[in-house]
Image 1: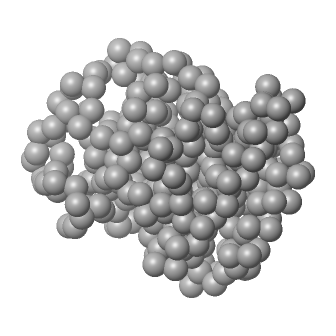
Image 2 (image 1 turned 180 degrees about the vertical axis):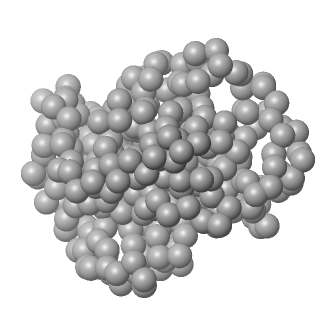
Length: 319
C-alpha cells in the first residue's frame, strides 16, 4: 500500500507539471489563420473573448477549436485552443474510450453486469430531466453498456464513477498519453473529495483543452481512436446525446451532431462532430460562463460556424 500511495503521489505531481507543457498541434493538421480569424470575430461579437471571473478558481478564458474536414487535409483554427480549462462532464468521453478499449481486448463485455455502490451513486436529480431512466441506486445491477449509455447520453455522474472504478484511472490516463493529450488526465471522480480513493483526495482537478478534445473527436470520425470498433461505438453513443441546449441548438434540423456536453457552476462546454453529408467539421468549445448565460451564446456561435463551414465547403467543392 505504501508503494501504491507513492506511485499516486508521483502521478499527481506529473499531472500538475503536464499542464505547464506546451500543447503540440499534431502534424496531420494544417493550421488555417483565415479560419481562426473568423472564429475570433464570432467569439468577440458574443463577448466570449473576455477574461472571466470563476470565483475561487480565479479567472479563465475560452478554449475553442474547429477542424474543417472538407478538404484533403484537416484544417485547424480556433481561439486559445491550447488553454487548459475545467471540462465538467465532457471528460467522461475519455473514460468511455478506455471502457470500450478494454471491452475490445476481451476484459469484459457491454453485457457484463455491474453492481452500483455508494459512494459512487451520487446523483439525486437527473442531469437531463426528460430522460425516463431512473437514477442509479446503491445495490442496482446493470450492464456496462447501460452505464456507458447513461454516462454519455444523460451525463450521469453515478454511472461515470462506476466506470472510472471499472477501468482504473491509470489505464484511462495511459490511453490519454498514448494519444499525446498530456495535461488532460482524468484525476477525479464525480463526487466529494472526502469519498475519493486513497491518493486522489488532494489531487488537482481534471482539466483539458479544446485541441485535445477536438483531436479526440477527429480520431473518432476517422475510426482511429484505439480501433475502428471503439470509434464506431463512441459515435453511436454520441449520436444519442440528450442535451441539445448548447451547440446543437444552433444547427439545422437535418444535421447530425455526435457530441458530449458538460456544465457545472461557471463552466459550459460542448464537443462534437457535425455532419450533414456535405458540411463536415469538428467543434470543441469550453467556456467559463454559467449555463443560463452561455447556452444562448453557444447557439449563436454554432449557427455562425455552421454557416462559415458551409461556405467553405462550397468553395472546396468548386476547386
